Length: 630
Image (cartoon, rainbow, N blue to C red):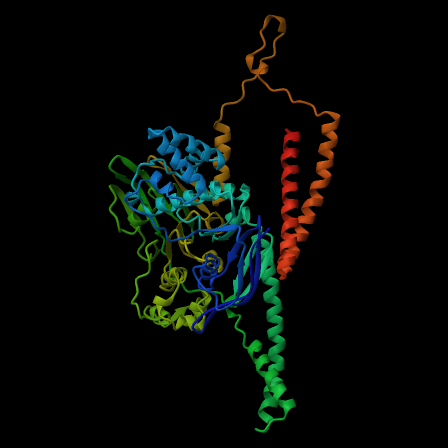
């Protein structure tokens, strides 16, 4: 079933072209991730699909039988409502049936209960309340009577996520779920739960995320938005990177050829008289097209930094018996750690465990209860906090960076300009001379990061740096940090980012305990799993005895289920299903490929109907295969 079709879609703001003549289709069951640098039009495209923005040109057709649901960064709520009241504000038939049922429980009119029971049955709402509470529990929301106005921003985000997942479950209409950075404000356990939930759920999804492990686990298609174009990739994040590299290699080859031709044509242009023939006019037009290609700027891929950092002395940073509590809550107790030159430490733990507090204590922003901190004389901290960037409304990007200095020092004694440094972090010339107030939220976050790095610190402290940063910027930042010769502390829930950067982990385990682990984040998680496995009690074993007649058989053996053998007919059925399923999957893939390249609406409808039939048959086979396997 085709959900959305867009043909030759274009959108600009003034001189800035976000995208031009892009075409795409969303079909039932698609799970698509959108990858682009901030300011490329991701949010605008989502708003167009939601009907909140109008495209400058092109057509968008949204199937009248589907519902489009958005999980956005901005969340509207009444602060006086309790959590369970907020969850019940969903405008869907199953929720309305559940409300009527709760009302009927206190109503004296017997007809109310009869009506409510009938609607609960029609809309299959009996398990909805329990599922709602389970989702909230997985997202660490347990006090359902708490007022929304008393909760933190992260808690509100998680409740809004729970509401959205409940809405998707409650609606029996076809739903296109659009999610913009759903993993922000979630700890690792919550991210892994959501990852598992979305990967198994039979939903159609359009996703914007910076979490590459999450992206790979949930999505099977990637849309790349760059320079006004939309590139479609089938497969993993690694496949997308490979395709992008091939495209850029081809582009560089084309640019090299165009530059050679441009030099020859430029000589010809200079020799031509002012009056031109029709033939020379045509060649002149070709010249300008060649010039455009020859002057394509690919420097954003080529610039790398080997910068001159202030020398680190023998003493870096040492914490001795640090204690900190808030009331009865102990954040850390007698914590000691000595940071080494060039060490990259990742700090992990649940929200509220004290990670950000430790960063503030290290820099003297917050008092410790007791203990000592010794900081080397040559240490210059660079702190990238979660709070936003401070700037003057009319100040230009380039001027904001130049306040620190006109140039950035390199290790070879040379320098690069502020403009070149900005270009490294994907600010093109046009954006550099724009007011900061005109930047998107993600672009401001990127500028804040640049502002910290441009001050040339030798000890970086990052508190959730990946929130609201786009994937292209994250790649640049990761490359920068891998070559960084100073010391580094990172607090982050981004598993991919942590795996690429850190070599030590400090894990806040609660009740004041901080555990040191040598290795990256995934290795630490595997270590935790192996510890859990080893700590589980072993299955009781039946001791071998010489005379079994004198010993009663333990009850554990009596309760073990016996595996039922398949009948001849069931065995044949299983073999048939295993032969037919790959054929159906292949056919489904062919239809999806055809839909991606088809623009005729009648053909799209026919193919969508065929796809729906095959998907239903596949689902039946999968369920029956599972039954027979069990």
